[in-house]
Length: 415
Image 1 (cartoon, rainbow, N blue to C red):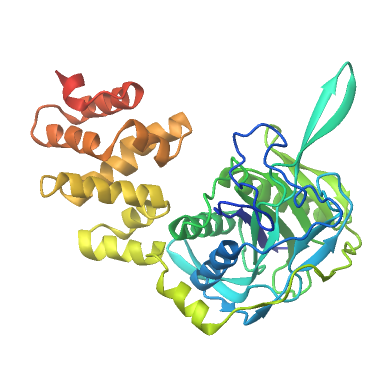
Image 2: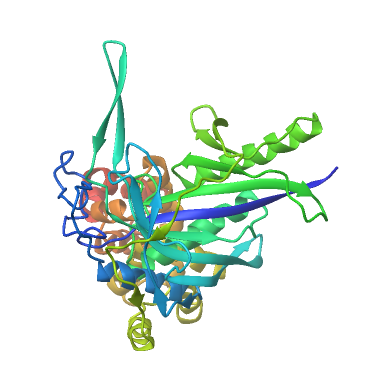
């Protein structure tokens, strides 16, 4: 029997606000000692009153607009009740039946074919604390760092329209790119500011009924998402072929072992006992407010890609890669500006997507870090020296690697 894979993604993105979602504590907690960015509100003390972060609402509206969603005129916050050690209050302030945005779409491209993926909803909630699992003298225990608790967290729920791990990867790359271009999130999976849970199931080709779905967690890179979904799709097919019964469950991805493992059964849905948050008033989002936010939207990845093709004469392939990251797109245009008419755009694109990206991949860094070592002006100086015949391609690549390692200019290294 032939099966098709059904995938739906739930993405959580931390928002780049200065303060937390419901209190005035700083949301910039990454390098802070444990439990130093806290107050009675995010510690969940009795009698405290939350206050809505307006910037977080605006960032969510921006995201909804960029994803072609309808923005709700009326929205409210709800208490999502569940007991867990990293949830300080015993409940999470989230949104249930009236999200900020709903009914959108995101277009991806795989193997030259475009496909529209539905967006069910975009809503706001607060992040939870972080559990640190420790072992001492053979005893296992956990510590709680509350710094992350209360940081604005935007959840983007996609429709189960994805049919392969590669489509899922392209969806995440495109979504992260949009959030970065909007300036609402860093989109860094390794740091946990961009997190993904995947629901995956299989069904016979042509059938409408799915086998029980599995939720996969603990994936902290695009590669991990791809490998976890590839493994899980294969595991489910093999289980059915053996006559085994698939169950609805949550499974965790073990990156070092390249497989998923069962974490808990989800035969029955959680009863979160949602009810309206009594300490926060309903929020009315006026058309005037939405129009003001829409007028401030920056150039988004697709528009920038099209401009790179029309204005600079780049192939669509190059333009797609350059605009998959805001830092890369900015770096490219900064180099163009520094070069003036001394270099064709295609040359700059070739070196960014070729040797420079090779160094980034080998060093496991992103464009932002590379730019700090090799500024646009320094990189252009190297490419002009190459274009003038002072060095050949092989030497230029070696010089670029030394520029990255030492921070020296191309002329210093060449001389």
